[in-house]
View 1 (cartoon, rainbow, N blue to C red):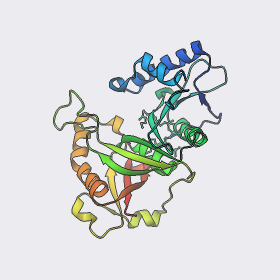
View 2 (tube, rainbow, N blue to C red):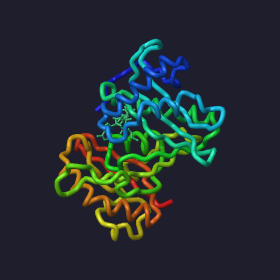
View 3 (tube, rainbow, N blue to C red):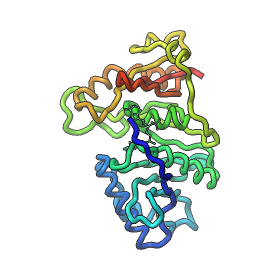
View 4 (spheres, protein in one colour):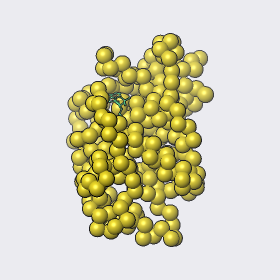
Length: 268
Ligand SMILES: CC(C)(COP(=O)(O)OP(=O)(O)OC[C@H]1O[C@@H](n2cnc3c(N)ncnc32)[C@H](O)[C@@H]1OP(=O)(O)O)[C@@H](O)C(=O)NCCC(=O)NCCS
């Protein structure tokens, strides 16, 4: 699943040099299209104003980190945009994007570590963000590798995806909370995982502290129609468990040889 890559990434804030920063911002914005996020693309002038520090003496608008292979490279391989919230100890991760050219080489995880360092330096101890709860790769990164928790489900946060046949594809998202003081991976041993029942309906949650809910192995490999079916089948149990019954998603179990992924939910 993963290519071997030894050289560490250089992850740093946007350049202080205005011309270089503008070039980096233009690259960040192009990357929204590279990962098919055109509808969420931030206009150049807004991204520029919010991120190059012109307003910093009055308000804290957060920061942007970029990654490159070697110091001095013009091309960036990804970016993360983090903003402050009304709670000084909590930051909000707006976007984390790794160029498709270099995905699955550890850069997403390296960004999360760099975000932890930068946000801690700025006084935050929790990071919040959302992601598509059916994206196994993101679940593995955030839940298993970083030890973040899914604390809420937001139904259809960005509305229906346009142009989809029945069943409609919806933009369900997890609200994630990451304790930045925790640098541990989430761990569950094979026995604990096997003991957690795989549930498909909310009634099956009754009396169970830990359960598993299957999600697709790889969304990108599915047609819209198939994604819609997964959502219709599995979403109600996730929504019920997390929003109504007090479970949190704490882990993603992946079984690569069977191309299967399971979210692990626990009641604290
Ligand atoms: C999500 C994203 C930032 C991850 O970046 P990345 O550099 O590919 O991530 P990493 O290589 O650090 O980690 C990916 C992990 O997922 C695992 N993975 C890959 N495919 C998987 C799958 N189908 N199911 C489960 N895990 C999977 C990889 O094996 C790797 O884990 P490992 O290091 O334990 O082997 C990147 O894919 C991206 O930009 N996606 C598009 C935009 C996006 O979704 N952003 C995040 C929204 S909040």
